[in-house]
Image (cartoon, rainbow, N blue to C red; front, side, top):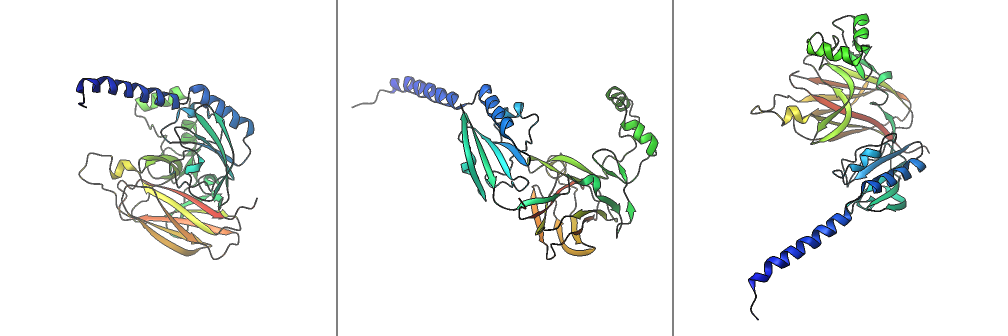
Length: 324
């Protein structure tokens, strides 16, 4: 039997139409996302987290206001240690079945093209989160907690104010229209605070994805140290870190100007580990096991040989077995 090439075009059209219909049937409607998030809002508990997968299917974010939502950027090997339970909104075939780790699905509910999985974390838990508790931490310059950086601007610590404390506070309290006018006139748009050299809560693009972290820009010839009180029971300190993509790859220069940074971790004044952050693209992790689980004082110190483009951001947590 001879094949008639003229039948190929109609066949391809039919196949294309069928594939399009199938794809469109799998796309969750806005009503599906709304119903799924309303279900979560009705059942979410203190200590729960809420996220979605796949990461690019983010229409459900329109309805996540008021929920403890976070980006699941490391699937299928995510870190859910901040939460006892996680509500995972899945679409396009993604669900908690894709998760690798000590996670157990408690229940599943379907809303059209969206599945809602309630997942229990049976692994280690975050006992102390430096980013969350940054306001109660101590930030200083120099060895042995030398010069304090004691001006809190609402999200981080600064070592000096060019305008003085009263004028800086007044500037920060200005209305939005006054702040915008200040920016247009280039009259101390940052209220006298250093734009780069501070220690603050932030979200930065590192490894192509947004990372919740602490902006910890090191400076040449002077240690930047953050110290805080840790609760008892911690097994290890985990430092997730990276230089921002902006200074490593997302620029027009022939190469990055960023130089390595050195992290040193202390427990009750004694060094318990050091690690070099190389100027490479990506979000990486370094951890140090604690031999003494007793309540104590932890500190993270960062140094570098060059202040230029040292756009470092870190996320520091103390982890251990869940207490409840």
